[in-house]
Length: 294
Image (tube, rainbow, N blue to C red):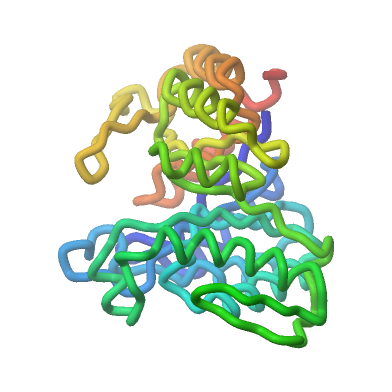
């Protein structure tokens, strides 16, 4: 099992120096990747925690310039509220400049007002995402790109530089049935958030029944807190979520449950209200938990 680190690119008072410290620590401690969170311009009711946020792709580009090894991931990019051609260019640029280190998580998102703020259509975001994924793969595989979709049309468009690998892994974010179906049809991976091992196993079964078109990476984004008083669950927009908490022995046991459910990758979001606390927990996890084979 591989482990990635969630970057503190959002939250009141967060700075570039906070992001830089966490990214460099992740690389030094042997984590496989670092991950940004994506919002752009949320309404006031979402001020905490997303009102103060460093843009996801720009952050990854900056982190690419100060690291050499870690993969650079978006968990997740709300692609339908962006121009997909411009997003394809930005992502390909980061990948080419970082020698092929990008992993792109995408999903439909949930914030209708944010869509409106960006002049994007919330109602057809699922259809737009499906088309955009195919468009990205088309642009990333050929410098002379022709694409005729419902929302985007290109005829012999020049797209260069290509990604370092002429492709970038696309992981589908979301916990519900449509996300599983999209992962089976269009994804290189499924990236759920706060799902329990049992929920992951159910999702994997659903995906396998749909006969995915390519081998999928099964990954989970998990809020992680090694403090003894940490709660094991939370609610996000009315939906129950689980955290990765407890003693090293308890965490290792939980990781084995995730592995049995089919998970091969975890993106760990340690508490970063105080970055020093998050850094200390990253070190503790790397020292006491990560070395054990999963």
